[in-house]
Length: 113
Image (tube, rainbow, N blue to C red):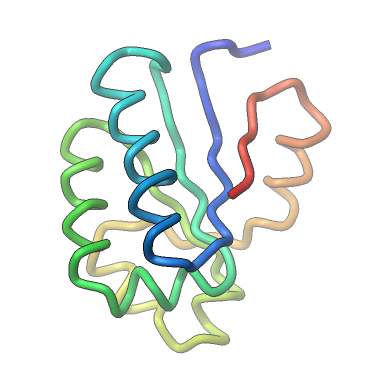
């Protein structure tokens, strides 16, 4: 088991939850060394939130600068028409179905919000 890597599946597009849980925890956890690696997986409605909310974009940029990785569901980004906006933010875009299944089947750490 990799006890130094955390995957955070972000599906809740509520701006307050996004700021005060997802972004706050991911950013502080990497800065304070609670986890060596953190990957935030942007899925569903959060793709639209990220593409449209300038404040959330700033929080993502700050977290990326400190080492938090961001990756988004390509199917979601395509369906919501936000793929290019997410790519411009330096967010990896991939089809997440199979990789998420592997994370769940493995013993990697996963938080879902």
